[in-house]
Image (cartoon, rainbow, N blue to C red; front, side, top):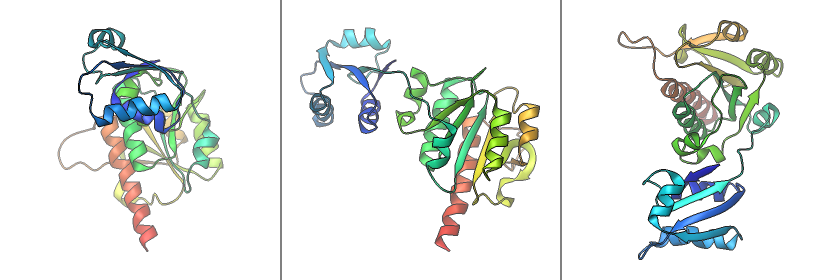
Length: 242
């Protein structure tokens, strides 16, 4: 997988992502931040070279490479067990066939920012971690735990067996401000066009919704994830504060 950007390289180094090779742009005045990245790459024994701006443009397919292009191993997915063990009480995101990599990237960044345990996606008809996801997430995908499962409905049943309350986020549920998310919680968000599949929704313990002030039936899924997750975070912080 080939990705680019200074912040993304920093995240990759911070999270010990296996890096095959880094291509740095030749610069007359690179700046201290750029030089610190070069020094860290060299210190870790990662292969690197200095190339022309045109070469980096060709390697990355864009002018916005920020002087850094690098190749990494394929993304390592986590297991559901690893996600649940990451933090207590768990706060988990399930995505039912999200297909836009920009949405997945934004959801990853929001989930990491909210301190969620991880994200669970189905194997079929769902976008996986791509170069675009890495870019849109600003490299935070390297901090995230993402699991791929064969059957999302069955996974919901398994979560419930482990004591995790599972909520479908949809337009006709209980307002999120009226629910208690301080317990082990998983939220399910649906596909950009079709929403949550019927069987997946039926497996959830309850349906919750984001109350709207005006006549808007839905929000972009990445926006919805942010609103719902940070409501759960707010509740948990208030509980911890006593």
